[in-house]
Amino acid sequence: MIIAIKQGVSAEETDHFAAMLERRGVKVDISRGASQTVLGLVGDTSSFDPEALAAHHLVAKVIRVQEPYKRANRLFHPEDTRIDILRGGGAEGVQGANGAAGAASSIGGGMFAVIAGPCSVESPEQIIAVARVVKAAGAAFLRGGAFKPRTSPYSFQGMGCEGVNLLLEAKKETGLPLVSELMEIHQLELFDGIDIIQVGARNMQNFNLLKELGRSRKPVLLKRGLASTVTELLMAAEYIMAGGNSRVILCERGIRTFESFARNTLDIAAVPWLKQKTHLPVLVDPSHATGIASLVPAAARAAAAAGADGLIVEVHNDPENALCDGEQSLTPAAFTELMASLRAYAELEGKRL
Image 1: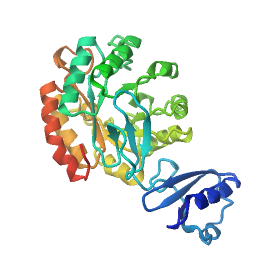
Image 2: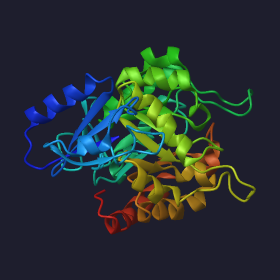
Image 3: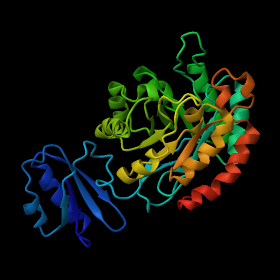
Image 4: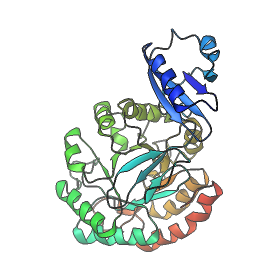
């Protein structure tokens, strides 16, 4: 259930009203926007009479939410969420679209963020070289896999703890905040210096992992599963948010269909649908969505024009000899060219790169 508070009502009055509602057995999330304050009631609201609530002198409108996702729902939080992260690993924050800008790298809320880097960390020279390139081209975050889920047990599985340490060295060198994939709960303690934890497509419905990340308060980049609906993606986000962590970023990375020319099928229509349904930032991964480096730039520009809040792109300084996903990785020159073309597409949707 959603309760919109009338304009002019003080924060103190709103808090007192919310406390009264919580005494009736529900959890109340307060979303204070530039022009509207909204109370989101989570729990058993069957005992609440919408007409009686609407008659309260503080209430402008009451809406019953039919969708199973609540905290991720745009009705609960009308303004876009922006996640701010200081370069160099400072404190993170969550802002509404009109919140004060106090961080060097932001995702959502009118910002178009590009996360770039190799599929996997392979050596100190490789990760630092790529970090320098993507920063110079305008990327706001560095991605790199230390732990890699692979289809074949014989494929390169990542450098593990050493890979995390090399990412931290690249962060020290460039100042770029880090994004890396977490595969198991016990790895959390190794990710203290990682700024955004990525949950890969294979783990989207690993509910124990999602619950633990809900308690961590560290930003989470949640990728859509290979055969998951967008509603299931939002429900996975709800698991994290129900634990108290509102720093969730959604990622469309292509789904498995009968089509075989590409690695996956990019569901570009999911982007505007998600932007309508949720306040959470929505990114697109054109590298995994296509699996073909020559298709990545066009897919990336399509994502920007469709209203995405950013991209996560694989970049390697030597794709032909990459230990993981070289065929879908852009060269430094190709990535630099892509970044030069993206600004106009982002601006079409009112976003700043």
